[in-house]
Length: 452
Image (cartoon, rainbow, N blue to C red; front, side, top):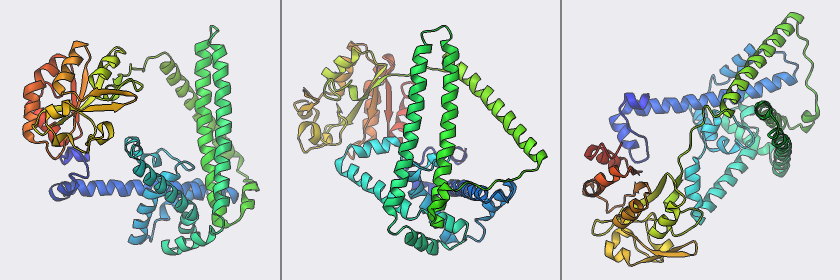
């Protein structure tokens, strides 16, 4: 809503400067949203921490009092402390989500497609691995940081020093405790899910397979929620243990809290009604899901025109083989050549597939068509887009064309693409996409029928 109101089409490192200069309200709004998310994550962590500590003390505080303590824990926070919170939550906690996870916190993580891209390069993979190791190391060394700041109200610099001192010579002990806990949880979940799966295989042979599937799915959902809550509580207790430097806490029983009879009945009745409503809703949703009422058929797309390594990516022989599997679309990539023709190629250079230290934009189309590329034990010639498009239409295969831009790409190339291929792409129900906002904007301006 904010971006739409300020007429910002997208947000990227390529236009962040323009947004700050020309749409300052949008920039301020995004900063405010980021700060709000950080505060909510902090309050969520603080509420869990204070709530579990309150339980171990016999619950001398009411839930309302714990909530009040949670909200007021940020009072008196200096700007430097708040900036430290932002850095801590953005860098440390997303990687600590393996042991402490919430729906809100799960939003703060490296997107899967970026991780996949980094994993394709050995040096980037090494760098990503080192980053994870460093984040994990800092996460363990600063495990007492937030309790020291929330409970003891220490300044962040003092809390960092204290946490660093507390975890000295205990790194492997804390790490081993986390690994063992995670392994035991994994073992329990795997065992339960396996038993449910084996039981369902037997129920599938009976007349009440659907009823059994509904019940089993509900059991799995309930167990998942219980495991998430249990895991979160265990690791919050571990954080408290590290903060107090007392491992006997894990073996202690929480103090018994004597509720008033009326309050106990009200609590139990509320919990029972809540569980009944949640169970009814889950069972209804499961029935709808298992009967296929909300399931849509996924679109099958062959990435770069190959299927299970059946050829060289973005080549005609691989396209022909893959088309026999009848995917909905074959995704492929095109780039401009030195003479501003379109060639089918994904990589920015020819080194990986052809062993040639050149970019597609440094060679003419005729030169590129003479080059042999090798992959998956196959070899083929680099095709022009005209030849690839003709082969696809001959075999009745729809394409998902990605236009990859380079320093050689110009606005004239976009017009040339639409003029030459727009009508035939529309006639054969092909689709076009690109990571360049400028190119996509020009494509839509030039041909709104082909580009939707």
